[in-house]
Image (tube, rainbow, N blue to C red; front, side, top):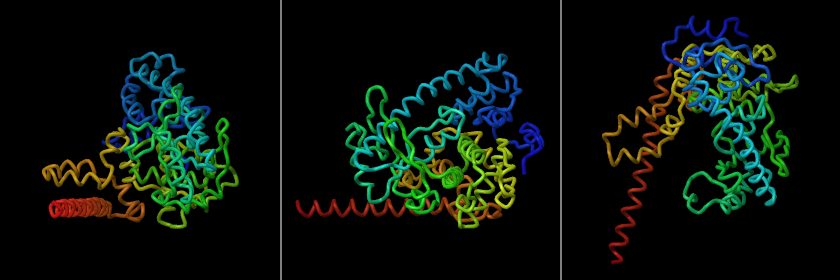
Length: 396
């Protein structure tokens, strides 16, 4: 299934009217490797791709591709990528020190956290700085969750404590580091955490110890995570491609692919999509693993990549925002526009097959479910509030 056409040729042949420019895909293709494929672009093409590279967190990948090309590295768009790339190189050292500090705090409490995505995914790139990430995703067994939370919150500045995410003060030279703490990976349809831990391996970060998932579990996790968010960020598919190319000869595809045949096909289609869009090498992937992704799937992902900015992702952050509709029902159109889930996410979360013809139905169903959950939650909050007010009135 290795594609014979170049990214540019496939783009022109498909004539996709919505999506990022072809130069954006050409820059990303193979960008995680130690040796990148040759890049033949002009300054105008770099200028077209630069805003999306900066907005999607792929600036370092873009900088790496163009910094050695004399005709490109000095153009105005390249200067922005250069500045962002250099900042990520410097920030990488601080992030590494931050993880060492956080893991050390947990180690002192007898906890060895499992690190997923972000830092752990960056290990599959030619240099860790190429994979930008915002927080540390740490998993601990349920029995250790409360202790881990107490340890980390003890090092959280008081003015940040109301935030849903734990932010640890790692010292003046390292700064504040956000931590997303989990006791399971069920939202990404992963096996129980004890199974993932049993296959994980210990890794030293400075003087601290952490664990990282097996490559089979990690590839499954990043593929499903990419799909669950609608394929909105190209670095998610770069993670998939980097791990696929790093798969050893004894890679256990039965572990990587879900026991659920529907989700197994989603994973297979995502790997095939990495071959299509990013020229991921698939020669070592068994033919029965790969699933030819439907044309709508590719089109939907490219449409997301044309607008990969974080505020879009935050705007789609779930049913909690429904409460704002009760104070201003006229915002329903805005709510639907910002919370309307991409077809990739709505089909996956609904348990539908990758080739399901009922994409719009599942999008409507998923959105209606968000509204219903949010409405029920708001009704309960109002009921509790009224009962509390009535109780205070009676006591007076």
